Length: 98
Image 1: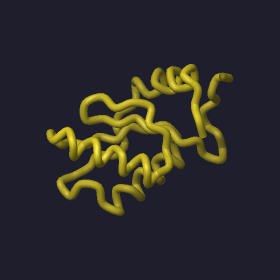
Image 2: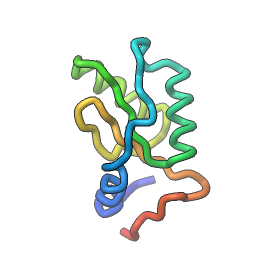
Image 3: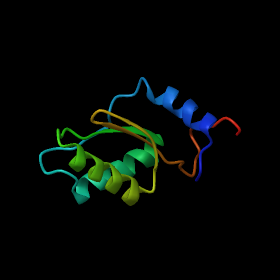
Image 4: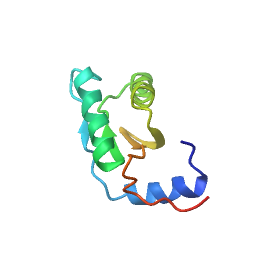
C-alpha cells in the first residue's frame, strides 16, 4: 500500500502521542520480537518500536529488517524509535483521501 504525503502526515500526527508497544531487548531482533510486532500491527495498525542501540548502522539494519519482515510502511524514525503503519482487514484508522 502506497501512502500519499497527506496520509503520512495524518498518521504521524496520530502516532505523536503513542508510546512504544515493542521494545527490543539485549537479544536484538529475534523471531519472537517479529511475532510481537506483527500482532501489534494487526491490533493497532499504527505502532512505535523502540530499538535501544547506540550504533547507527546496527539500528538502521534492524529498522530495515523490521520493515521488510512485517511488510509495514515506515512513517518515520526519530532517535531510537521507529513508527510503523500497516492497514488491517478491519481498517481501524480512517485515512484521509489523497
